[in-house]
Length: 155
Image (tube, rainbow, N blue to C red):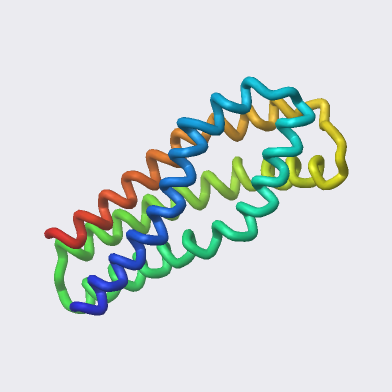
């Protein structure tokens, strides 16, 4: 079961990257954006999403795939406590993905398009407000997944 434990560690590392990013956005980015004008908001967030949407899937996917693989290996080995905690992490990560795909990603694309075109969309603040509305939930989900993965290593 050393392979399963190594996969959990890999999942912890990948998930921690996304968790840290979401927590930073909730604690620092969101309140900081209130103080900038709409042009700066679109330029900054459009470019943040341009790079984030290309680069952040790597640690996120690594975390999810490693969590799924570890849960499967623990199940095959009939290590039920680890199977349950790893499977809980997987379910939580899938809930995060659903929230990201349904709410955050469409907003990211709109802000990226606006920044690319150099246009300030009339609804920039509404878009950012809708994005901000789910960042706490995203951070909490990532934190819970991370806790479940860590619990997997100690049960």
